[in-house]
Figure 1: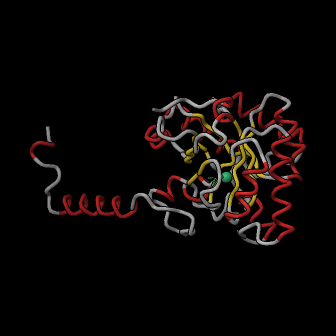
Figure 2 (figure 1 turned 45 degrees about the vertical axis):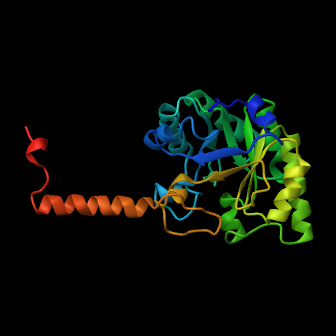
Figure 3 (figure 1 turned 60 degrees about the vertical axis):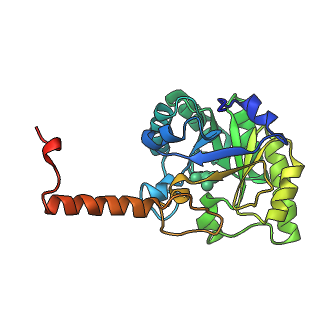
Length: 263
Ligand code: KIV
Ligand code: NA
C-alpha cells in the first residue's frame, strides 16, 4: 500500500496516519527503503557513521549533494529530504543561495534545517522562495559544540515553553513538517498538539505524528554509541562480521572458490 509522498499528502497525514522516515546515505540502501518509508532523509548524521567524524559539523554542502544524488538514484519513488549542513544557512541570503544550489544539483523534494524561533526568518525566506523546508527543533546536533554536548530538552517549564514557541514559529515560517529530537515525551505531545503540520519524532516518544531513525543505528551497523531511543531491528554488525569471517575461513581452507565457482 505504498503511496509516493508529496507535501500535500504529508500535510494530510496529520491526525490520520503515522509517518515513517528513515535516513539513507547511498543508492544501495536507499533502494531497499524505497516504497517502504514515507520519507527518506539524507541526514548529516552520515558525517559520523560514513565519514567517521565525531559530530555532524564538518559535513560540507558538496558532500551532502553527492549523497543526495546517490539516494535519489537508488530510491526513485521516495520523498527525499536533504539536511543542509552546518554553516550553510547562517543567514537568509546564504541559506537561499545554498538551497537553490541543492535544488539545481539534485532531485530532492525538500531541505531540513535545524533551529527554532531564532531561525524562523531564514526558514521563511526559503519557503517564500519555493524551497520546501522541514524544520528540526529540540536537541539539535549541529549545536553540539556551542551547547557543550547532546542534552535532552524540555526538562524545565521555560524550555518547554521555548520548544512550543519554536515549533509554532517554524510552522508559521512555512515548514511542511518538523523533526522534534530528544525531547521529553510529555513535551513532545504538547508540541505535536500546538501545530498543524506533522511532527516527526526521534527520542520523543510515540506521541508525535511519525518517527525517524538513522538506518545504520536501527539496523545495528553503527554501534559506537547506542542511545536509549534507538530500537535495533537487525544486528547488522554481527551478521556482516560473521559472513566476512566465514569468507576468510573459506579462503584459508581453499573451500572458496569451489568447482562451481570457477571457469
Ligand atoms: O542527520 C540525521 O540523521 C537527522 C535525524 C536524526 C533526524 O537529522
Ligand atoms: Na541531521
